[in-house]
Structures are given as C-alpha cells and as structure tokens.
Length: 104
Image (cartoon, rainbow, N blue to C red; front, side, top):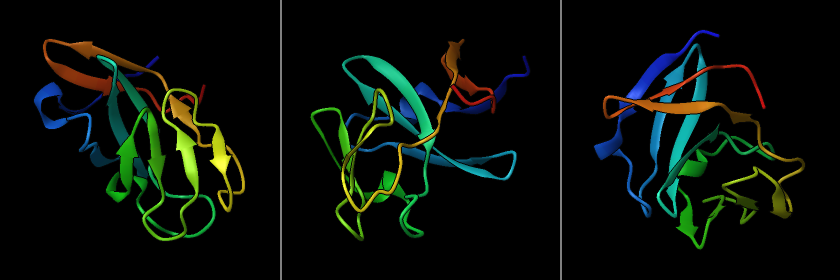
C-alpha cells in the first residue's frame, strides 16, 4: 500500500477541515472526537467542496445544497447528496497525516 503525505495534524481543526489534492483527487481531512478521517471532498450532487461547508457533531453539510454526510462513515444523511462519500485509509506518522487512495 502506498501512503502519501497530505498535511500536518496542526492543519486540521474540528471546525475547520483540511482540503487538499492527492493523485488528482480532492480530499477532505476531518477531526472528530480526536480521530482523523479522509473523505472525498467534492459533493456527489454538484461540484462544491464539502470541507468549506458547515461541520458540527461529526457531520458536514454541503455549502451549496445542504446535503449532509456523516464524517466517520461517509454516509449521506440528507439529500440531495445522491450517494455516500468515498472514504480513504488514513494514518498519522510523525505528526503528518498520510492517506492511500485505495477506497474503503
């Protein structure tokens, strides 16, 4: 499995996820209850970066269309999300968040 550095842990806050591009894919890194999660960052309904949406109680709301997703699972909780989000394996090595693009 190939791991890619995405960001430093200090770049991710519970209210302010990190947004980056890895292998041509937009990825959002979230912090919920002390754990980090990597999800696709583009809303499946229409192009909007979810990391720029409203984050609260382990959920993220699309800033354009109000679709809501569970950060831990990627599950679409409120339409018009269209489908669940892709999740990516993540690990922390020496204060750096790394992901692999193999979908969970």
